[in-house]
Every structure is written in C-alpha cells, then in structure tokens.
Length: 234
Image (tube, rainbow, N blue to C red; front, side, top):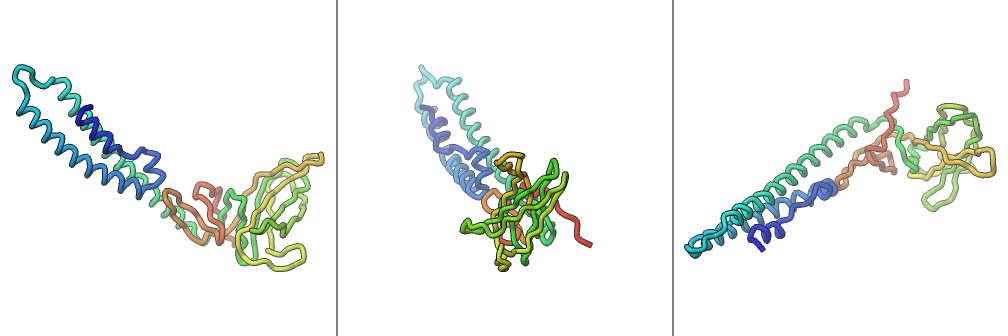
C-alpha cells in the first residue's frame, strides 16, 4: 500500500451529510484531519526523500507511481478543505435562519404540528373543508386523556376553532402543550383525518445541532413547519 493511501485512510474527512448533521463536530473533525494530514504529509516527504537518496541507480523509482501518490495525497487535502468550507456554509445558513425566525418573535404564526400551544388560556386550530361537514376536534393532555372533544359545523373553505383552555367540566387547564386531531365523518361510520395548522404566539428561537426551532410557549417546531405569519389584529 502506498504512503499516500495510508495517509488517506488516517485522514478521512467528514461527508457533507455529517457536516449538516453537526456543524460543531464537523469543524473539530476537519481541524483534526488537517493536523493529521500535515503530520502525515511531512512523514511522506521524509520517506520519499530517503527513498530517493537510497534508490538503486540501476532501478530508479517508477515516475508514474511517484506522481500517483502525490495526486492521491493532494486529493485528500482538497476533500478536507471542501468539507471545512461546507461546515462554514452550514453555520452561515443556520445563522441566517436564526435571524429570520427571531424577527417573528411576538407575532402570531400558523404551523404544521399535532402539538397545540395553550398560551394565556387560549389556543387555535385552522383547517380547510371541501364541503360543509360535522368536524370533531380532539384535544388530549400529556397523559393521553381527552380534555376537549367538540364537534363543530364546518363550512366549505377555511375554518378555525378557538379553545379557551377549559375541559368538559369547565375547569381551566394550565398553559402548555396539548395534542390535537381533526376528523370529519365521510358519510359512513369511519372518520377521516383533516389536515390542519395550529396557531400560537412565537416566543423564542432555539438552535439544537443543525436544527433551528421556533418556540410557541411549550411547543417547539422546526422552522420549516411555519406555514404563515398572521397579520396583527387591529
């Protein structure tokens, strides 16, 4: 095995997917790989110089092999540099997402999520109905118990339902995250799930690894789940 091949195995750079999964880890890995490459490259040059000094004049080193080793080593160095640049690009993209998402903190947003935030005793669900139909909205708490299960008469088109945070007995429940599901009867005994969004007030932005999440009280959703920023109420 050539010296360059050994160095390539010892200095494998993180792939693009690894860089996207963890920018911090990829940065450290790339830095360590570059240090290892530098050390190996110096060893490679030392071995090569020794080999050239002690080669048999009647049987000199094969020029093609020598060139191949240099090209292979240069390729490893280029791969590490490329992944280092990719890590920086991922970091810049995440920073842009944080700035963009922080601009909507304090505003009402509609997001795709099965978790509905109850904030200051109020929560909202929005959905579209193809036809007028009886629509059931089931709300459950963290323990899986149903705390609200109203059936409303949805009209064709856009619909919304606002929850006052009270259970069937009129008890006011604490603010937090509740699971919600929306279904409609399809003319038979079975119910069909209806796509919906939940509405809440954006309260913060959180970056975990490569993900940028928007927080709405106790609910945290990926930035990509935001469907719209609602206009301020007059």
